[in-house]
Length: 577
Image (cartoon, rainbow, N blue to C red; front, side):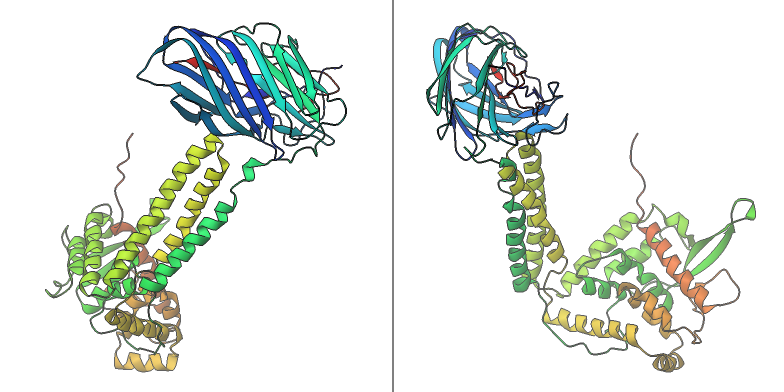
């Protein structure tokens, strides 16, 4: 009989064991091939310790690298690319009558057997049971079991090996198989084997296996004898199911504790009395954004508390010019102004007045942080949101971050262990956090007071984006500063561009609080300048200083020769501890 064609597998993680203080007197291994494609394995290892040890460590590889197929035989499905990692899966590990721990890392399943507080000597028996998924190779017209019954990584000699391989159905005809013994790469066969039935192969070694010698078996059989297992796809439904379940949960929380009452929008010509643009922006978004506090600058300017002067600076050799903003305090904020306004106003002029914007950069970010916190306190004190809504909003955020944390930990842990159902479960947890963060942005639920103000703000925003020029002309005649009064709210509503377009062709008087670098007032120039100026202000006052310091070829082992000891799945070795 010609040797089966080569199927080269290399362990992705080298398993190296020093010579242990024991020998293996008998190694029995039984493979029960399930019709669903996985293998149930039982190992019975009779060990003799000649020095005191706690037990043994059985190490079984499950990750292999595809190497070149020098015999140019047909490659199994999935083995087309040299260097690709092929991964089986080891599950349901049990050790009878012994304490044990299972750890999977770097492509190897380590089973540590024994009690750390107890040392043993002499003859011991270890019975290990486990399942191996995806160990069968499928070709165009047949399937193969190519398995290292005894791996070449045992650092101790093995006196005898007995094995039994059971198939779920009879293999028709005379099954083609081969057995290899010796160190990795050996094609010797120092064993005896026979088919006791059409589905059962039994055998034993005829020569002692020395250190780093193994026993590998290869068996051909019809590909329809068993199903092709694809454990890497098991549990994929978690990726869709978990996000769906958590979306339903988060949506229920939102409808119960976060959904605002429905209302019809009525146009409002002005902002609600006593509601600053910072508060308006918060209520419109249900959270604080940087532009909310930045909008207070034109708000204060229009009210006469500060003035901005634009200076033009020449660049290198006078070929380019840049603009610098200067802030001048005109008067103090009234004592009844909210704390968040006082915090920010004091921060702007903490270096004196006038002050250049460049001097504020990296210097008042803490004041801005305090202002943001004070704004949150102000919103809470005004009872714009229900207390239960705030609680559930916080809880939703905690749940979402927990899902990401647990999920990422699971992805790292189970991807290296090859545990696909738990890996997909972990991915599902991470994806489940996304609807939480999305719905979180629409929490919490507004109170009656908050809803009334929000309703008026929506009507004001509607007016800003739809008002006709004829009506604007009327407002400008009544109040020449009308544009400046509305601008801060247009900023937080994110409709400043629409508001500016409404004034095209109208005579807008120059603002008293903003002095441009050009002596001639131009409406379009003023609009664009204000836009860029507020962007610069936002970048500078929030700027934080930089504190950073320095598996085998997949070829068939049939017909063309080339199989060898240690070339299949499974195997591995062990040591004492």
